[in-house]
Length: 299
Length: 251
Ligand SMILES: Cc1cc2nc3c(=O)[nH]c(=O)nc-3n(C[C@H](O)[C@H](O)[C@H](O)COP(=O)(O)OP(=O)(O)OC[C@H]3O[C@@H](n4cnc5c(N)ncnc54)[C@H](O)[C@@H]3O)c2cc1C
Ligand SMILES: Cc1cc2nc3c(=O)[nH]c(=O)nc-3n(C[C@H](O)[C@H](O)[C@H](O)COP(=O)(O)O)c2cc1C
Ligand code: FES
Image (cartoon, rainbow over all chains, first blue to last red; front, top):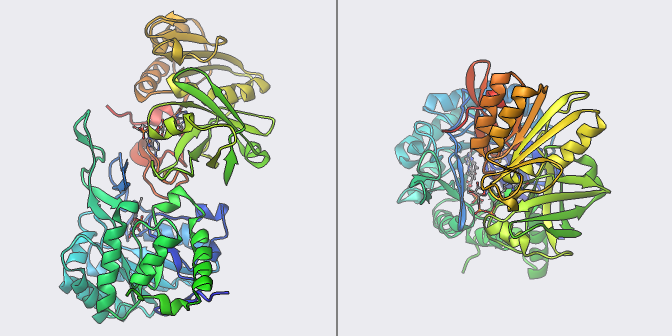
């Protein structure tokens, strides 16, 4: 049987399949053994609780989903008190996604989380399009990214993954500066800016107007970002954006992703991650290729 | 909560607008509680992307049924499906209605808001409640049963007028302990105003657009007043049933 083990920073994953931040919770443990995932990524946590944006926050479009959740989360203290021990029960890598409104705030969150056992890594979300101060602005300036990641690198030995936005011109620059500053891996991509309008009321379907676009419609965008970035960095990439099945996952791996994450499709088929793990094994067996040789093997 | 691909075992066409799909599964039927819902998706179709939420209409003999109104892509696709074809079901989801015993209960529904009540009425009857059921629709097509007190806006069947006018008159003459309501927002808002006048406990079942349906995405939130403060609650997990007085109704 195919060996799907992969190293992401200091973590060893039993397989390269994980879930995208904000699209998965322990509720899914009722439906399948989530310890079978290579890793679990939490919803993004901030230092203080965030109520999120005004509803409506969701709109389905022809080829994907618009969301403007606005990083609703219980805040660091509640997360540690109520949620973390639940995550720690699962036999897989736990990656906590975090965001902050300043470098020191990111630092404070990581310092606190570093005291908690059984967290294997952090995904630094500098790419959320739905919040003002702790979102995308951070991830669009290579100088800020360098300062932020260098600062966090000094604080923690755990794996640091930086999640990038596609909503910029030269994603390679940001990727390189994250790598130089000591990031262990990159996640790409976060949602793309998008919009939908109700022609009866002439109002945007999302209260905030502009939202984050995910799902099948962004797959080509995500794929070319992974392909471009894989050419300029040595650290592993976790590819995501519109993955709905094994074939989609394979495209990302061949483009250069060492691992993949499923987001929106979890809402459609909650067992999709398991199906992809099995699908990858079958493909490797049939093609008689090692997983590591497949990564970035685009011709 | 279970996720299963199940064949349609019965399909009943009520009229041009409404139909009932029934599925048979011992485990799913055993978990159902009145006011909960399932998410349904035709696995053969990529579009629409998201599964759609439907209230549990009734549960009997290990079967779970859904009363569905044709409104758009997914519901029209479902209406064209045949017995034996498979649908992906996730559920039961949500918290459902709080049940009572030995009470006088008023049920109010509007249009497809009728869907969750036959299952609830069955349970309330077992618990020795006295039930008054008022239902309103636009035309005769929107009326599902002769056993309830029906109102139509065009007067084509039952009494002419809005169901909310009907319950207001009823409450002036009769005392009830609890009201359960499901229907369009405007109707629920009006029911809340009426119940307030008479100071009656009110449980409303709400609708929003849902992405995950199980509480992870925070997409389906509504505004609720809790301890004097406005907070967001998830309709799929904290609801769909809420205390009507705490809901901040949309204008
Ligand atoms: C908890 C709950 C219980 C429901 N119970 C029933 C029921 O028992 N019977 C019934 O006929 N209908 C029920 N509905 C409404 C039903 O879900 C919608 O009619 C259905 O989603 C329409 O899908 P469509 O593709 O046919 O129409 P579309 O044209 O895609 O949408 C029409 C309307 O349906 C709603 N809708 C669309 N997508 C979603 C989504 N992902 N989640 C929620 N709502 C959406 C929106 O209000 C939209 O404007 C319920 C809704 C909720 C939230
Ligand atoms: C409802 C929803 C909530 C999300 N919340 C977060 C979040 O909290 N943090 C984050 O980094 N990304 C968040 N994302 C982005 C996803 O993690 C992912 O990057 C994006 O959806 C693309 O993948 P997909 O097309 O497979 O969904 C969210 C996406 C969705 C749809
Ligand atoms: S639909 Fe995802 S939290 Fe309710």
